[in-house]
Length: 302
Ligand SMILES: Cc1cc2nc3c(=O)[nH]c(=O)nc-3n(C[C@H](O)[C@H](O)[C@H](O)COP(=O)(O)OP(=O)(O)OC[C@H]3O[C@@H](n4cnc5c(N)ncnc54)[C@H](O)[C@@H]3O)c2cc1C
Image (tube, rainbow, N blue to C red; front, side, top):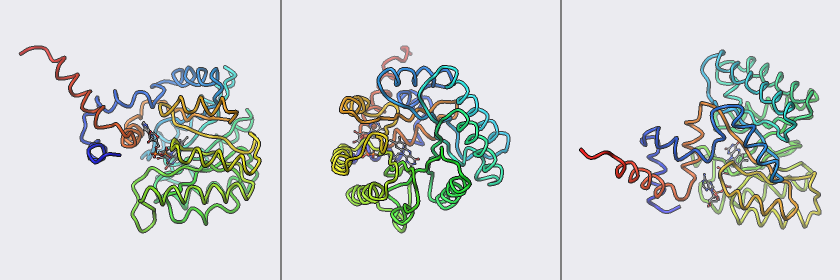
């Protein structure tokens, strides 16, 4: 990312919400459940699977956490009704982790049961490092009591991740998006890539199901080489991408015979997710400048 883009990315929290909303529209299905269903139907028609995220994180009241959990149940029911191919991705802080971990456990357990009854999969997203330990603990607890339809996410940028891998049977491997101190996380892009590949090798070696979540061409090519060398079949791994990012590359992966899943967020709590996505867009400075210019030129004469 160029220096100017990096500076704009850092100052995004100062950019008016209206601009953030417009620029981040491609990354989000829309505010409603039906928006998510429409996007998933389109992805399915193009040979892609999906995982649906109800936007909302770090909720501060039990009512909010219950409302997000309720929305997941509506998602699962609607997916069945429309016979769409998708699972769900949940953020534990959206289900109450920061308020009361018993409430969070209850919410997750109910979603897992509902999803299992419908033959659907639940992925637990990984959030910032203040939640890593508890997220892994809860995931291991659910796996230990026999939930088969649950998977976890690990972040290659964390120093600890390689040692967290043993025993994880179904893993989404990503670089990691939160701002973490150098004491616990790699910052150098090459070190993050190297860690990503070490984790990928370890997961393949252990026979874990691995969801290769990246848009990084170098990592995609290396991953393709590794799954081929290991002789993995398409029920042993998949590629994952975010809605609105490199979708043509996803199409190519589908054509090459890989399973591809797209992360589809929807809902009204769009701000935090949008800022994170825009901060990763290598052309963010140009987009912000174009949007501002468009607004200025549209302004009625004084
Ligand atoms: C399916 C999925 C689920 C994820 N879940 C989590 C999670 O639970 N926890 C977590 O911490 N992180 C998660 N992430 C985010 C991840 O950690 C990275 O922050 C993100 O994927 C960017 O890293 P990258 O590997 O794509 O490489 P990058 O080097 O960031 O991107 C590679 C290239 O992709 C393109 N690109 C990337 N992002 C954008 C963008 N926003 N807009 C336009 N182009 C872009 C650019 O061309 C860029 O050069 C997830 C990512 C994916 C794909």
